[in-house]
Image 1 (tube, rainbow, N blue to C red):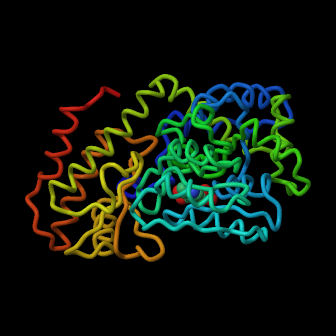
Image 2: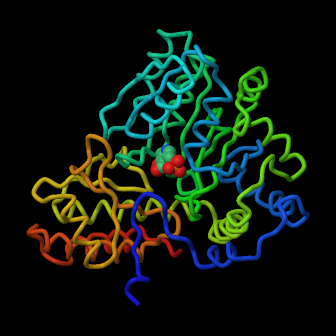
Length: 386
Ligand SMILES: Cc1ncc(COP(=O)(O)O)c(C=O)c1O
């Protein structure tokens, strides 16, 4: 029995709701038939609502990185200059994708664990008017911060026509996203995080301004050419064979989100963040980020007096609880607890409870129940029925 019991609390992939799992096991359909076309049509409004856009949202078969690459290849060409704001490993990924396409990258590094300052980006763009696009990450999964992408877009637009590209892979669907109102030109997300699906789909939307640039770009690549996705969407179709099983699942995910209500989904994520952070604070274990910078989907913890990797190993062995380690220079120095998608305050209480035992097992002096009580108190104070 126990080998079937896994507690996946990493910042994606995240657990799959049973009804989504069931939806994905439906028999395969021909991708050019009426049934798949009906699914493609039916998921459009839900995706638009989650993105906060009136534009169509392209559904591309590929992981989140394919969406990031689509953003790059569609709006810039070799030799163009872009600014990448690097707040962690996924900002860094944008620089690598741009390098692969011989794009000239300006890099604005922010200390890992801190959110970007919109004013700094504004100044950078002002002094470098040749920059054609600014790339940033909404939730920086590697550090658990949420970048103020609304402020960023507003600030950059005051001084430049550069397009604003945002990687929302680890939070869109769990955190408020108003692409049109905030002035974001390209928004990307993936299926395996707040969207509660397996990896394999990436969702990309582009603004009116971005479409003008995309249409004048003669080197949009082939598979990731966004105009192909847009043109096919007009006929409720996809340019290439879609991951039909994931589309079955996506349809159900959107039903679950609609039934809960998007505002409520966001409130649940904020509550889970607050509960998780309160627990570690009560246990006297430092967090990597400030409350102001913290992301509602993932919490990064920075132990001072026990080994993060030993702790991760213990909770995995004891309970089948998986929490993520650190990336790049934070490897071995932090661990990250995911609380997104199919995850509730009840799951957070259970996770904290398992974590406390893991802490004792690696020699950390704590009083059992301290973290759970702090999380419970947050729930009692702020809790919303979900
Ligand atoms: C913020 C962010 N961007 C991009 C990616 C890459 O997505 P994928 O691994 O699906 O290609 C991830 C995955 O963890 C992520 O968290």
